[in-house]
Image 1 (tube, one colour):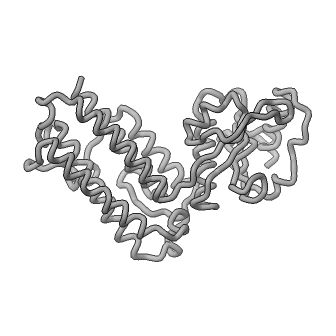
Image 2: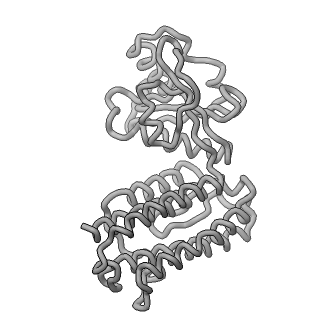
Length: 311
């Protein structure tokens, strides 16, 4: 805690030349997330820190505040990782609630990339321009909208694929094989989650910093240009009887309403959003939010594949 408070003083008070009471009564009510150097010495400031404030303290919603990275760590991705982890902590402590923050205005774009949207007019806080921003609550409805948006993007990319790249084979996929792979993957995910939902969520292990790391790692890997082998040993690889791309697309779209209807039914209880649920064969156990985020990121990954077919 000393390391976190020293960093806050170094940046908010000294670097930003702002005389204000950084320590307040919210500190003792909050959860603190601190990134330390691996071999940090006693008294050394943290590399980054943030606090998660419970609902009803700063705002009606839970909040993330006092977000800060040491000057030496900026630009290397630590600030983004700090916020991604802070969001996941809020999700498991106060599931299915929106998150409201008071953001310095020069960081609006950064927070927008993390899912926040501006709410209201800007204002001065301790002489620095701020604005409130809100991240929508993550429930099944939230992920239905995200999934529908990325499927629509996939459809646009599919329309641009040349006719001679619409059909391939098990060795060299065309658009039809990509679609069947996605449908098989979603079917496997749905089947796995349906089996898990037969248990009581309260007997499953709680999500933690390790499962946060797993979710961030697999989602980040899908957004990279990494090439993948089927980790299920063929269970989600297209077969030789794959339909043409248009028929495969129509069949895949038909499955979505029933898939999401069943998800809404299975995960009504907010406790499901706080436990390790889906075991990815490469990443390990993921939270429900990261499971749905993985499903959308998987489609985005294959949009890039369609773009390569187009090229």
